[in-house]
Amino acid sequence: MFQRMSGQVAVVTGAAQGIGLAIARRLASEGCAVVFADLNLNAATAAAEEVAQSSGSPTLPLPVDVTDRPAVEALLAATLARFHQVDILINNAGIFGNARFELMTDAEWRRMIEVDLTSVFLVSQVVVRHWLSQKRPGAIVNLASISGITAFTDSSHYAAAKMGVVGLTRSLAMELGMHQIRVNAVAPGIIATEMTRRSLESPELSGGWLRRIPQRRYGTPEEVAGAVAFLASNDAAYVNGELLFIDGGGTFAWDKPSDAER
Image (cartoon, one colour):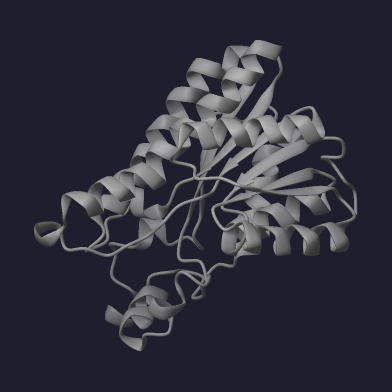
């Protein structure tokens, strides 16, 4: 396989499982040295060892709380100590939760915004400051969601956070482009992961969802990883401020009647 990212170093947050692991695996397969940054160091270590063995690329598992600035600064320092550079940042770490708006607590709201939005600001700022100080180019890919574009019930805090990621992505693309730092985002639709398994196994929920996806299937973490790898690579050298939907065509069909309902 042609390794279009050979010699580059990528930091992937939330890399121990799910979409983050698929992204880390894909980047490693394309020649990247990959930092597996995750709150769960044991899981990150196991994942990093497996990916290093299968890809032949160097990996480094590191613990990080993406909501804590000193922890993020320590992550960058450890990455530079090992690899001496950072070229790519993937802001993947995040949480999901259901809560009816009128019953949502202040703690639920704040936790969602902190993990899914503020962390993107925090990790990006720490890395960007390093790039600017070294006059280095870089690429950031943020994980947004179709939830930030198409409304779902019982997750207004998640939708707000992900729409915030879209706005932050586009603002940073404008602000940092002159420094050759590109910032893009992907908006996955319904992806089959451990986090979504319970919902996808519910016939009541999954049947309605599938009818509104033109391809009539859920996405895979590997399909998200492929899009992220493109945006992170030099193949996307002139792509900046983009939001790429990975949803089987479902985002703008969501509010339309399904074939079964016509």
